[in-house]
Image (cartoon, rainbow over all chains, first blue to last red; front, side, top):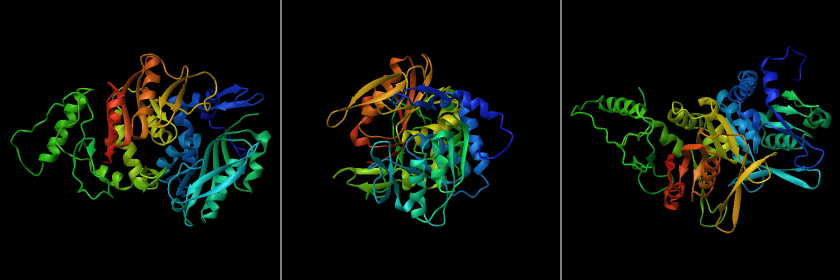
Length: 182
Length: 245
């Protein structure tokens, strides 16, 4: 939660459904597994409802979901608030004309791609992913949207790993999360 | 008025063939034919729809109407799908659903058509195939109160997984699912954006059957019927909204 507010009672139910898997994908990483959340229809619904309640009156015209877990949360949010859903994908998955943005990994780099014509300068966009860690992917996503002239209103994630300072990579754009894992 | 959700053949909008609505018979058993009495009126279509829908919902496994009553939402959905030639390689006409996702009404209608079909069928599991199945599956799961189970490429799921191999044009690939995500006796549908050769869906069926789940149906937005993917699904029925010949 980015503000000092009373915690919604649904949050605890959501947090307990997230499974932490140690040493995945490699030693030392405590992997935040949201698939167990998806197995609980009420907790999954609560998750989506919390985002929808926040965004439904913010005139969001685009929900951009980051492949692949961002699709799971982004698509239902888009449907509920009547926004377009735009998938932001790994290289070579999207056909037709795309733009791409590179971002750093621990070793090497990767790319995020978007269809050029999916979004334009009138659009108000929300970027959705399951989790923000270092913020590299979200930053790349925001850049793609800004390059076509859209306004990024907020980034939304289920989970934040605050110790990795991802929030600072968002160049002042607000971040909204449901759960922090320390 | 209760609308019939009929899987129908719709020529793709870029095809030169005229759009001919006819029933896409995806079920193995001969469908019951539903005939009205000789009553003919401007309301016959409405009565027919109601009668057929009542008959369909009376028996959980019954076929949809054999008469060609195309749900009015289907045409809009079909026309929102973009065909990209020669992607990912020459000769392939790629069915791009991202343009459907940009059309808020068409995307909403797509989900509604699946939800209407499955909501009273006691489905407790919606399994979605990575990655485009992750776009259609979760909204359906949420609307019908089922779990969503992602079926993923190798090494994406943490913890204990079971996997199933399937053939590609050159070589093989694997699909994985979490152990314990589903339980024996659960009723599932498997969702993907498109069925081509049926290899991925067949592997997903095998994976779920290995853990004792009953697959009620496979559901896709698009079918490429010339690739005969339906034949790979064995006893499992297939439901699609749009057939792109």
